[in-house]
Image (cartoon, rainbow, N blue to C red):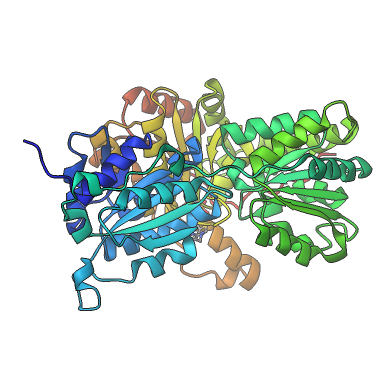
Length: 548
Ligand SMILES: Cc1ncc(C[n+]2csc(CCOP(=O)(O)OP(=O)(O)O)c2C)c(N)n1
Ligand SMILES: [Mg+2]
């Protein structure tokens, strides 16, 4: 039977035209027309157990592919749950589109069912946020959302879809379908003169460092940075952790940064992670360059650094990197000696780490967990690694290799997203292992997603460090108030492995270092979402200093 075209059909067919095939969702009254409209399209609905999980999965999709992930939730409370997760995507510069059902337009202001000022609620955590106002133009609304999410500095975009517009019948010739070019913005290049100026300033420096923002923390971004480093002979790194200079992945960064005399910010916001450029962390004579998609952020860097600001330019990060590489050809820009020294600091790890071991019967030291996991992460270059939480995850970030597809909590500093992210990673990656490393407190945020993963046949291995404590916060209490005033941060040694089993997954409980490898092997072989619940000592995150 030939069904009349509805607003909901326009939304779904537009997503299909844009090349999307997966939508992370949680159902509700306002969006059931969209579920119905998915029938007969190539769109697969992955039904999660909490709206924030749908957004976190879409976030991972955006980070891994560079194409926006799509999350679709119902209006009111569904939207409210989803909005919470947008901050993580915003901090990590991850492109995603949140489509939220919405009260009917003719009920607005009259106390409509689940009526909420949704666009206003999402605005602070989105690049753009609006409510559609006509059924005919829903396709161009969706295209615009996708375009904004991926242009300039990528990030989340919200679009509210009133249910009466989704249900409305639209005459075929009245629908305004987006053109293929409507889905993407034209990148803003760095012009040659600006690139030459940047390269000239770098050549005059002795110890320059290029710091990229989180948007480059994916396979194409990491490859670009490696090419920049080799063409310019200038060390590069990605600053994507809320711990800033203390990001365990960056080795003895705290010591490296004090020596740097020029920082080139390539799409990296000037913010708290850089200690606001202040001494003693950064040399007061250190100069700054900012190349950024947003004029406001170039201006902020200039304002914050004053006379130390050497150059600023608005350009998209990736084309800017390409221009720098092209213009550096045949020029001596950086220095091999400094590059080697900086690389050494990044890979510095204390010598005594090789012998660190647990002092407690029945519990592992965090490093023993990651020593055992390391060879599994090393095996396949397509491995996805997701690190989430406090102290335990920091040990993981300092001990484990950094595969091209590694995701961490991000500058937003929000824990709890990893299990939904693993679901998205597995939808994208059919074969290579997907590993999650997370604390026991963090496990609780989205543990119900084991059911989603089991239902959809999406295996991954989550290694949980159970120290029966929100340890990162406990350590703040000890540092700031004293050990005798530590309060309220204790958990129980709960059997998270049995939670996974109850929800259709595989579970392992580990209390001895020698049992780690077997537990991981059995988890991988199970073909199910697996939880390796490791009883660990409660220890602070690692501090890395320059090796002697
Ligand atoms: C959404 C969110 N809530 C709270 C915090 C604060 N926080 C950061 S780390 C942490 C403790 C994590 O505990 P756990 O997962 O057990 O890891 P551990 O530090 O014990 O290894 C908390 C509560 C946060 N960063 N994000
Ligand atoms: Mg813990």
